[in-house]
Amino acid sequence: MAVVDGTWWQIILQALWLMLPAYLANMAPVFVGGGAPIDGGRIWKDGNPILGPGKTWRGLLLAPLVAAVLVIVLDWIARAGYLDGVGVVSFGGPAIAFVFGYILGLGALVGDAVKSFFKRRRDRERGAPWPPFDQLDFVVGTLVFGHVFALLMWPVLGENWMLVRWGGWHYAVVFLLTPGLHFLVNVLGYMIGKKEVPW
Ligand code: CTP
Ligand code: MG
Image (cartoon, rainbow, N blue to C red):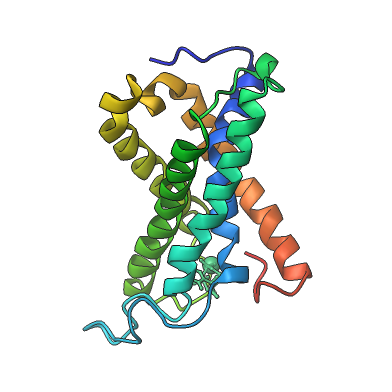
């Protein structure tokens, strides 16, 4: 499946390469979010909010822009050849990098909002811990959006971008490393006063 492979550290770097936009998009809402909630403050039939006040339109639509800008930078780094030894790949120029980055970021935020829907159904309030779903919701969203986008772009790019770049080990790396990274980042966010709880 994957033509990009290599030693274990190359696989870790390749996996993180594609997940960096998701990590950034997932962190961005505490800075760019707020304002009108996606659910309009409406209540589900179980008496809990549909998504809750922590899921806002600004977070959903602006956070992916941060990912898009990051992917333009990653694409540039790869095309400049700085990381040739690592086996990471360019996204194919700034325009496609921007669109792909936005889609990856949007996937992260949609995954996060879908998680919140089910979290509210399980009577967990905004910000309450719900492991491992809080840690992996955005990863699943990014992977789903990335795969669908790569499939749609296949005729244009001449290859299925995700399938060519990713094999089973990349998924294993992402699902094993993300909860730990997520925890570290949230502790940091808590320390700088941007998160109310350290998870
Ligand atoms: N945020 C936002 N819009 C989004 C997602 C997040 O404005 N679509 C902001 C909110 O201020 C939120 C913060 O980022 O409180 C942290 O995001 P997250 O941890 O995903 O939300 P929680 O508050 O923990 O809510 P939930 O319990 O629903 O996950
Ligand atoms: Mg949370």
